[in-house]
Each structure stands twice: as structure tokens, then as C-alpha cells.
Amino acid sequence: MSGLIPYLLFPGNAAEALNFYQGVFGGELQMLDYAAAGRRDGPGDAIAHGQLSGLVEIAGADAGADDDAVQMGGMFLSLLGTADATILTSWFDQLAAGGRVIDMLQARPWGDFDGTLVDRYGIRWLIGFHPED
Image (cartoon, rainbow, N blue to C red):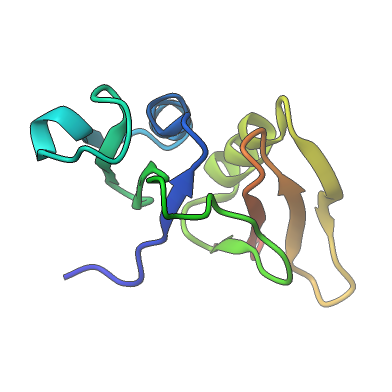
């Protein structure tokens, strides 16, 4: 069993985004296009369902004609303590490339490290670790 898996609807670039996340997080990526899924509400090569399985799990698809693409406000996808400090720092840097850093990954007064960013696909991330972990 896994925990909560975010399911993101992209504005026509799900394959690109999911491949990007696989490049950052590793893991196994499976994708099914609209044609193979029997969907007719978009281009046949659009992604009807994709899922990245591994240390970080994300699912997503291209938004259908009646769907809204993801818009994030008032929330982050949190990767606090998901891996060791070296890996989390690398993920922060890779996700920030082509995106926008909101708050640098840095030491906090309470002793932990964290930072926030919006990646190139508009997804907001909170990444951090406890230095002894």
C-alpha cells in the first residue's frame, strides 16, 4: 500500500511533465494514451493516465475537454524527510531548474532545512530534511 498519490491534470504536456519527474525522482513510469484507453475527448496521443512509481509517486494525465488543468494555490506537494539530505537537495535543484524558487533550501531557526519552489509545470513543492536524518 502506498500513501496519498497526487493526481495532476496537465494542459496537454503530461508526457513531458511525467518524464521530467521520472528524471528527477527515478522510479518506473507507465503511460497510456487516449487512443489506447478508448477516449475520444482529446487527441489520440494525449495521455489518459500516467503513473510514476518509486520513492516518489505521482499520477497524471492530459486534461480532457471538460477538465481543468492543475492550478496550485495555497498548497505544496511536501517531500519533508522523504530521502536523505543529499537526495532532497538534488531534487530541490532539479525541480527549481526552469521554475521559480520561492524560498531557498536553507537552515531554519528550529534546526531543520527546507525550501519551497514552483517547478516548470506550475507545481509547488516544499522540500526539507532534519540534518541528523
